[in-house]
Length: 311
Image 1 (tube, rainbow, N blue to C red):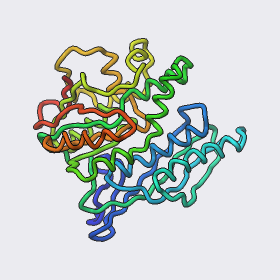
Image 2 (spheres, helix red, strand yellow):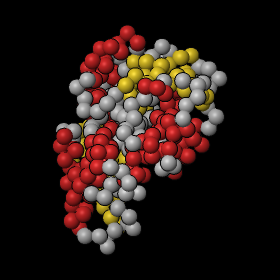
Image 3 (cartoon, rainbow, N blue to C red):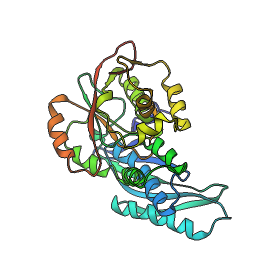
């Protein structure tokens, strides 16, 4: 359905919808929820809420209010649900986002997330389909969360690896967004289930460009490569390879484990932004204050035979 005030819809698989209210204000709408990825319900609540809030930051906006979405089995004690909701509320408070209600249904497996509303100026919306030739790619969180979470579920991840992964997933993209919002952000997405390669493919295709990825400069969580080497690969990694298909080429020999990290599904991952080269130094200096690792991971070039090139 066409509407002149719908600035971002479903056409480019963007992170959220954006609807223009007036010349000064646009509404951002998003929804996300998933099953537990950690055993501690309070931590799960924080991660799920952080992930849901991220879509608003990825559009260049600020979350304003949210509603809980909960599926919960009646065989579990209510205190578990209480802890999940407490964790989510903590992150909403950190994001300065109001909790205004929600809905709960009985289900066989716990699920939790948020429906989030936020606001942005209509002329300052960040889209995932507007990268420009010559842009530089910057990623604001390390990769490998799906692999580390698989190791956590298998009971073999170290305490250091767990702490690092949880810290990454719990960190709001608010800090990265506010560090870069006064610069020229030509396109942006947050790296989640489709992994780095899947999201890059969507961005490059939507922009009719090719992304050249620097495999030697990717920020990666400690342990992710090692676990990938022994075959701890989540199913989503193989799904992402099918999604991208033959739309990428590897121009130098790299380990299969590194390639798997690049296709690995992330949970509450960082922002991937494309910015003009002349602003990169200032943006990187501003990002030094955020609580996660970040790096320049590639560049945007004119459309080649493939949408993605790995070097």
